[in-house]
Length: 437
Image (cartoon, helix red, strand yellow):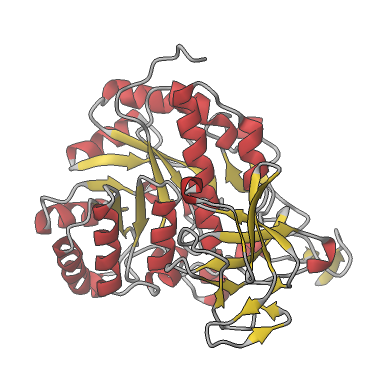
């Protein structure tokens, strides 16, 4: 409805920043803010290793130069032996002047406030805030924002906002879902010694398992076959996808930030989720919301199947949040190439052939122009920008008759494109497992 009234402050779109490149991609494709970390005090050790202090500083400067924000994840659960290092880490991160710290425990919340009182504190979803009482306690301890538990409802969040109008509320709207309650899982600790609540989850819930029935009196063991040879994915949760509910979420009037999960996901994921949710949010304000359009774009990515989970439904009302058949499936499209930050070259991510027309995904269509020269053609066809190469000219001057993902050369574009554009083609069944981008 075009007459719908909203607060002057638009809801924030918050995207994951697994490394410097993905930070830049998320911002270029529409995120208002990004979150990431540099150490094992973050709940994503793999992505934390992608950043060092200097590259994270560069990311903050990149964001601030564009009027965007960066939140530092310090949301792990430290042991006593780590507290000295934690204090040093908080001080080092504070010196970079980020826009907030994301923390998960009362002790770290207090410590961060003591060391860096000028840095706003956001409470991680790991703290499991589900009600007004808990929100009040953390607010009184200094938290300016809560990242609500994934199991909470919009109705409960509205009640929290009514009681604590100055407390910002952030909710997850897209990304991987945990089998355990708000991520409090110990499965990979048991099986591989990798502690999820300290950032090293092995994603054991995504594995296939074989089920057995045991009789302790006789010592007999029977295998229960649900799927021959593959076992069953009894703990595999579908991916959260609330794009079609953005209108409803904004109408609730209690949400300050909508968050996308996925610091370990691919650059294409960072781009598509940021671009799609940016479009959905902007369309709400413009009075032209179209849930089907956003789903079409999100389905171009690999996923575990989608669910709208619990924010707009009660847990007992939902029986479609698990995927018992597979751990990951192809999206409708496969990424073939990615334009580098210079905008002059692309890198192959799957297969590229002369004469093959590929769709261009770009953060900014305003700068796009049609062109046709000896390298190739860029055109606007059927509502999409496309690119077709006539020759694959490597940066070193060599011409290739075809290029595959193992080829690390950069290849010349027919004309400059916005940094971090992606080339994609419709996926086919014979593609199988493909290069992650």
